[in-house]
Image 1 (cartoon, rainbow, N blue to C red):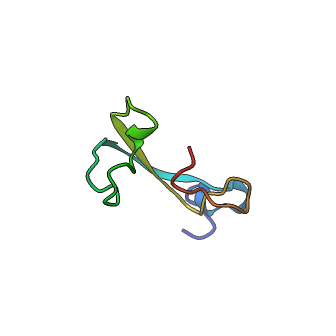
Image 2 (cartoon, helix red, strand yellow):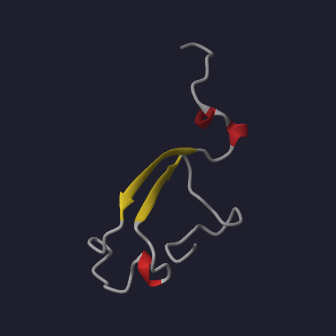
Length: 71
């Protein structure tokens, strides 16, 4: 390995990097036990959801983190 760099996630200059993304068929199961806490409330045609993994926390403005109600 030595000085060779593998991937942008190891580079300070690259910023936040998306590591993985999963696509799931939408289901109301596992939505925190609250029947009205799911994507189809605001987006009735939702059929699938995407779960994304980044190499660092995501922020709106560098200070305030994204929260579940953000779109």
